[in-house]
Image (cartoon, rainbow, N blue to C red):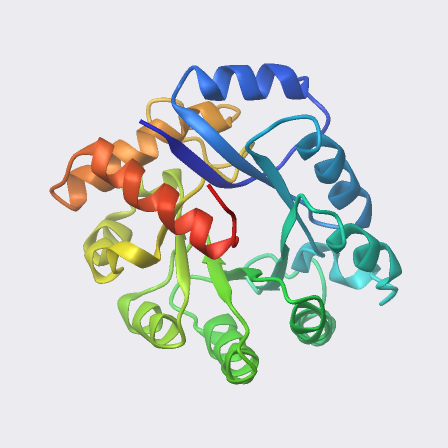
Length: 259
C-alpha cells in the first residue's frame, strides 16, 4: 500500500529524516510539504530536496496576508524548482480573520494570477465561521475566473457543506480530506464524503495540526495518514488499499507528477 500525504507543514522539528522514516514505515511513500509564507516555503523546498517522493508548494496563508508586501520574486524562484508542484497554500480564512478580509482577498487574487503565470495548480485554504458562507462565496467567485483560464485547483482540508462542495466540484476541484473526518462532531463531513468522485479525492494530514483519532489533541505527523485513509474507506464502503491506490493516483495527477 502506498499513501500520499498531499499537505503537511514543517516547523523545523523533528528532523526531516525522522518524519520521512516514520511515514514510510506507515505506508506513506509520498508527501508534499506546504509553505505558508516566503520563509516557510523556502524551508519546505529544503525539506523536499532531501528525499525522493517528497515535493513542496509555495504560497502565503491568509493568516499571513497582512504581512505580505506583494513581492513575488522569492516565489518566482521557488516555483522554478523541479520539486515545487503547486502554489499555496493561499486563500481566505474568516474564522480567525488574523488578516483583514480585503487584504486576504487581494493576496488571494494575486496568487491566482501568479499560479496561471507559472502554470502550477493552486492549493486553496477556505474556512469560515459556523453557518457562514462568505469565504465560500468569495472563493468561488475568484476561482470561477481562474478556471476559465484553465487554472487547476484543490480545496485543502474541506469542511464546508454539500452545496459548496458540488459548486467547487463543478469547477474541477480536487478535495483534500484530513483527520477531521475521524472527529465525533464531524458528521457533516462524513455525510458528504460520498459526493466527492473517486478521481477528485485527496488525503492529507495538515500536520502538525488536526491529528486524527486516536491521536486527537496531540501533534500530528504524516505517519498518521493511514488513520484518515481507514476512515474514508469506511465511509465509502471500500478497502483502505483501494482508497490508497485511488488517492495516490489522484495526487500524481493533480501535481502533474510522473511515476
